[in-house]
Length: 113
Picture 1 (cartoon, rainbow, N blue to C red):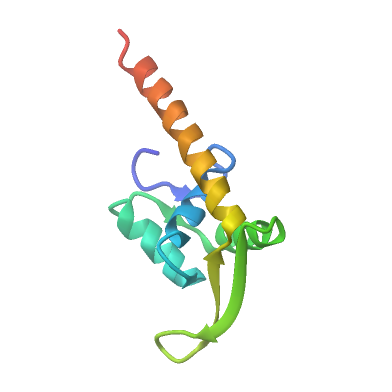
Picture 2: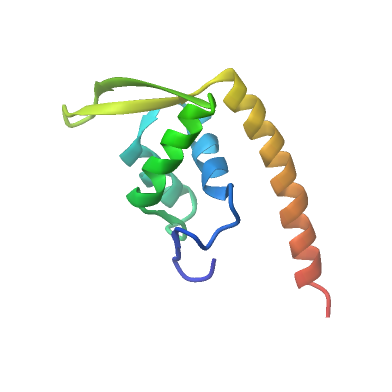
């Protein structure tokens, strides 16, 4: 991921979904809040483009991993708030386990001479 790549097509498929689900495991958020949270949590290395985020949110909602409700944002604007479903929590746990195995394997290969 090097120097501040945005989250577009340069991540393993499913990584953005996993990051969104993990972010929402902390509580319901609207799209901009999700973007900000991922960026801050990654020390500004990961930047999610809106053009990638909203299709991912829609896809996750269609799969039953997220639910959404309309509410008011901090600046009194109407915003769609997303939250994890029980199915989404289970899926996140599975994906986090898979990611840990995959990233560990990649790290081991990168450390070999």
